[in-house]
Image 1 (spheres, rainbow, N blue to C red):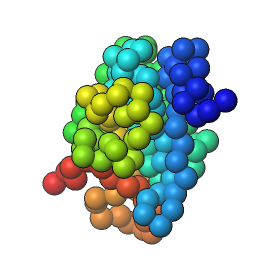
Image 2 (tube, rainbow, N blue to C red):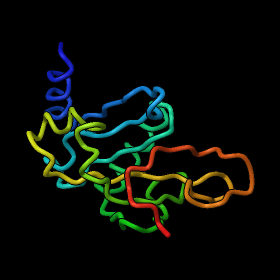
Image 3 (cartoon, rainbow, N blue to C red):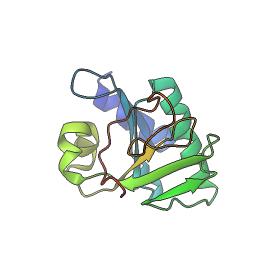
Image 4 (cartoon, one colour):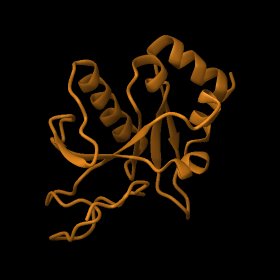
Length: 148
């Protein structure tokens, strides 16, 4: 089965597909969804800097939260969307779609769909753009406008 066939099969069976991309010299490991926008009307989701199993777990939690009626507030800290309690969401810059989300662009046949990046804080509750009280533990590729 090709990766495109697997994407279509998962979307048909589950309503969405998770695409894991292994890190390299240019970017960290990341995971994104395909099909959420078409199936449920939710923005696609993107998470960077976590290994695929943990990223998949958090993505599933976010999807279940959305299905239960919780709403994500973009450009804001969100509480209670995942079991990790705090997180930040913002819309990904569409100029990054072809480079980072090529399978989603293939699925939608354009870049006319929203993607929200899930950003997670470190144990001191600091996000990547904030000063931290210890070593950096939450390195993430940020494809959003950095809050000031």
